[in-house]
Amino acid sequence: MTAQPPIPFRGAFKAPEQVAFHRTELAIILSIYGRMVAAGEWRDYGISSLKEVAVFSVFKRTAENPLYRIEKRPKLRNRQGVYAVIGVNGQVLKRGHDLKSVLRVLERKLIRGVE
Image 1 (cartoon, rainbow, N blue to C red):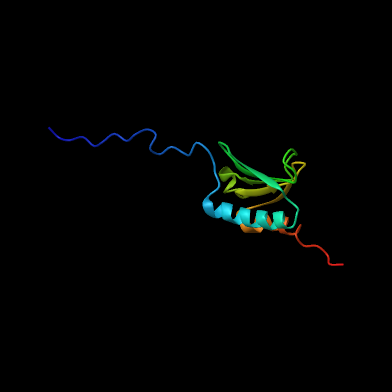
Image 2: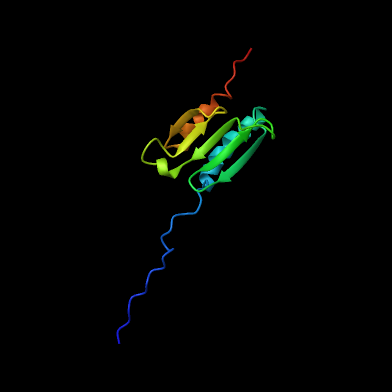
């Protein structure tokens, strides 16, 4: 009698159930978040990990709609880019493949004229 090869488990190559930010991505996002909190621009945040998108929402006050949403959509990897910054009205402010370059649109808010 010969040994048969093992039957692969059907769920072994399954895609993740939800998209989440990696630790290095969160470090970049929290870096700019900390600077904006210190500048008094932002006050609270929320993180959502859904099936097709991970969202980091930024709030001026806790009970409001988010000022900005930083989204990660892996399905757009070969198109516009994985990362996007979306404004309060739903407009896409910046989209791209590199998180740091996408977040530069938010850093402009830190630059203020000195009187």
